[in-house]
Length: 141
Image (cartoon, rainbow, N blue to C red; front, side, top):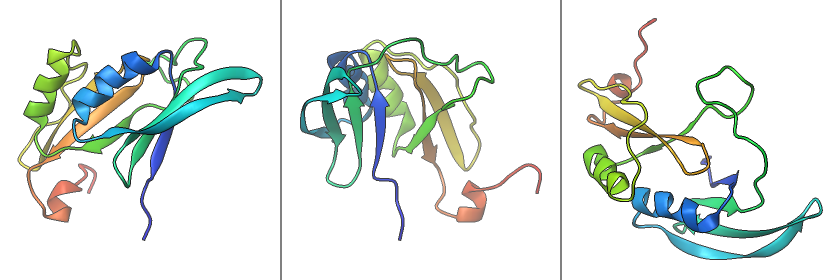
């Protein structure tokens, strides 16, 4: 078995980042955190998640995020499966985050993209079927 355990994100502000991620994942909690020096720069960090998966957030961010509308090298987006995308959209709207891209929607799934406070593009997807070949179809097949 293999699964993704965590993403490590360098952010500008831990509290601002938590507003977004707490709305997206209300069942998660701050698991722990601390302070450290990373390549000569002091930083605060925390792990936000559940017992099996989390986001490692580090507040030592500097510079500019890559433009997610460009072809510049770097992370394009990361995605999470959710049980109810409409509820997630409502929770994020209540804390000031609107859908950035509507994403796909058909009989098998629907997705929405958001930009977090640091400029990371995050996709959320709700699958409307449990049948793998319906969830994982490609137009080129």
